[in-house]
Each structure stands twice: as structure tokens, then as C-alpha cells.
Image (cartoon, rainbow, N blue to C red; front, side):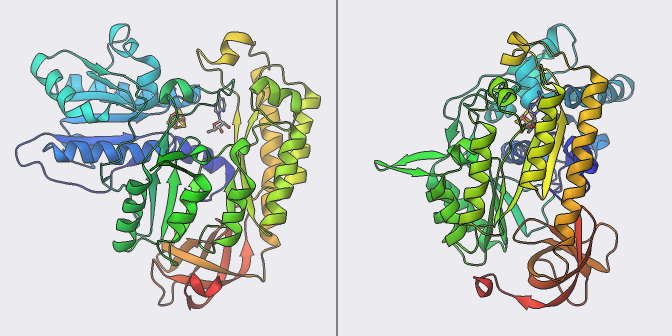
Length: 477
Ligand code: 5AD
Ligand code: SF4
């Protein structure tokens, strides 16, 4: 995801992502897929597209051309679900008015959470398919077309990793790609719906991950971001030996010295010294970790069931900075969790001041049905208080991000060019090793190149610079 202003990021998370590639369907039906939520969902939509294409369905970017509309949904906060409901209303209206044959399906986390409720009580859709049932989509689509009845598969699996399915790449810039390495989550954070919507943790076989990365390298990709709900608890037993996350990263990093590797998202409990040493030793494992803290107060962290204290988290940050000098850190923060007092909120602010993250995703607490918090606690922080606290968190973090970026002025970074900048074709954009977005004049540079850039200016979200020439990643090692 692009580093943009913090409020934009919230928008960006909620904005639908679209399928880049179109494939014709000589005889078959055309499918339009809209994706909400995290990168994992984007990655899943690429799997869905691959499954459907292999069964003769065409893919289209234009919903008006589609015979099948699939919304791949998110359930993490209530407003994510509301957005999907509004979209469903639009498509249901289209179906009533001009396109009675349109099949409307809900995939992903909201499908898993609401299951048949979307059919029985609300009669919203023709198809409800959970995140582990995408192989079944062609059959379910045939079923609903033949019978006119709604089709459902929300079975959660202990094994499914879609390891053998080559994804149809979404919105690809041909430079960076996502590779899913594990699914599900066994942490039981009190606020989070993900363990219910995504099921148990399971890791994809090492060989299939390495093969996918090798293929991406052969196609000219320069960066992979390995994905999972909890990537650093990756664990796969191969011929009697266990490959854990540090080992997996190490093996990917050996595939090509010119391939950058990132990952998302991780839990502090699994951020081991072994992992930090891989960051330090492998020049192409980026010097950046997204390490969600969620809150700055130990009592709140305990209520959230995060399994670490404020002090333990801060000690981990110290270790990360000792082992990997200059490492860039980002985080997720929740404001207004159940029972949060003013003093506890102040602890989040002071933690932000201490850690000085380069970036944060910041949210107001939103109670989710069936979670531990929904069952055991009261969502008792008033909406205005939640809003005010979130505002204070965003203001402080924006100031810190700006100061961190101002300190970059004068430094030189190796930037992997991703393509034209948003604002102008005359400018290019790309990221530093530390995941900061840099914009600079195009000259003759091209996407996919590593360019040395001297930083000359910034906002809280973007660096601006002057290019000094191309380089290789290995040269900076
Ligand atoms: N309310 C608000 N934010 C939440 N997150 C997860 N569940 C909730 C919730 N119920 C946030 C956490 C997580 C990120 C992906 O979303 O910060 O890390
Ligand atoms: Fe949303 Fe979480 Fe599901 Fe991703 S895993 S789509 S963030 S609920």
C-alpha cells in the first residue's frame, strides 16, 4: 500500500481494489470482482480470479459488462461492512432494473461472519462463499444459475492454503507482488473478528512459496511482500525439519540479490532475535517492520489479550533498533477500547512519543459480534470521546512522521521505482528500503530500476528528492 497521509490511509483501506487484467469469455460468463479490506483479501481475489479463469469464466473491469459480481469483503470494523452493504444495494438495484440474470455474490470475511444470514433474513445475494472455499466457486456458480437458489459454502479449513494456484495478479505494476504464505490466526485478541472469519493458522509449503517467488523474479518483479494474518508465526515441517519464519525469509532472500523482501502483518510475540538477525544480515530483507502495538497501556493490553506489556513491547523496539540500526517501524493503534480511561489513553500518546514510528494505521474501536470483548466487556467509551482520542493520536503521529521525514533531508536512499507518481507523469515514485515513498523527476529512469535519490523535501507522508543515478541492490549491501 502506498504511504499517503494518515487519514487517506484509512480511506485507502476501505477503498475497493479492482481487477487489472481482463480476459474474454468466449462462451462463458464474465465476472467482476471488487475487493475490500486488507492485502490478504487482494491476494485472495487473485486466487478467485485464477480459479474462475481456469473454469472458463471471463474477467471484466466493468461491472456493467458482468454476469457475475463478486464482492470480496472485510468484517474488521462495522464501517467496513456498511460500505459493502451500500455496494450490495447498488448492485441489487441494477439487478432489479436492467439485469435480472446478474449473479451477486459475497466472498471473504463478511460472508464468513454472516453466513446464511445474508440469504435468509436479508435475501441480499445469490452466493455466500467464505475465505477457505474459493475452489468451490465454479460449482456454486453453476448451482445457483441452474437452480435459481442461493448457494453457500462457508466451511473453514485446517489445511487450505491455495498453494498450487497461480494467482492472476491484480493492479500489478510489474515491480512488486504479494505472496501469501500462511492463512488464519490463532491469537485471540479480544477485539478481533479475524480468528472467526479466517479460521486456524496454517502455513503454506516452503517449496511452493519459493517456486512462486522464483517465477516472479523470472517475470521481472523486484519486490515481494509475503502475506499472512500473522506471518511471523509461519511454521512448516519439511522432511522432519521445521522451517520457521526467519528461515523462510532467509531462503527467499537467497533467490536473488536484486529482490527486495517485505512482509505483513506480524505480532510482537513472534518477533524473535533470529528474525531481527535476518533483517540485519540479508541486505535485501528490508529494514522495516510493521509491528502493531494496538495500545500503550499494560492494563488495556491485558484486556485486549495481546500477551505483552508496554515494557516488553518497548524492550522489543530497543532490541530491534540495536540489532538493526535505522530500522523503520510502523504500527496499528486502537483508540477507545472497552474501559479505556483518560490516563490509559495518555499512555498510548506517550508510547508514540517514545517509539516515534514512521507510520501508523489508527482506528477507533468498533465492537464486533462474538469476539471476547463483545461477550465479556462493555463498549463504554462514548463515540465523541473515541473520536477525540483518535484525533489526538493522529495529530501526534502526523507530527512525528513529519519530523522523522524532515530528518531524512540530505540523506541518499536506494529507491525501487514503482511507476509514475500519482500527480504527474513527469515524476516517478518508489520506496526506500525503509518503506518510505519518494517522488522525483522522471529524467530517463524507468520503473523496476533501483535509483539513488538524494532527499530534498518532504511532507508527513512523502519524501521528495533528486535522482543521482541507477544502482543495484547488491551494490548497497
Ligand atoms: N476495532 C477497531 N480496530 C480494529 N482492528 C482489529 N479489530 C478492530 C476493531 N474491532 C485493527 C487492529 C488491527 C488492524 C488490522 O485493525 O489495529 O491490527
Ligand atoms: Fe478485513 Fe481482517 Fe478479513 Fe482482512 S482478514 S479482510 S482486515 S477482517
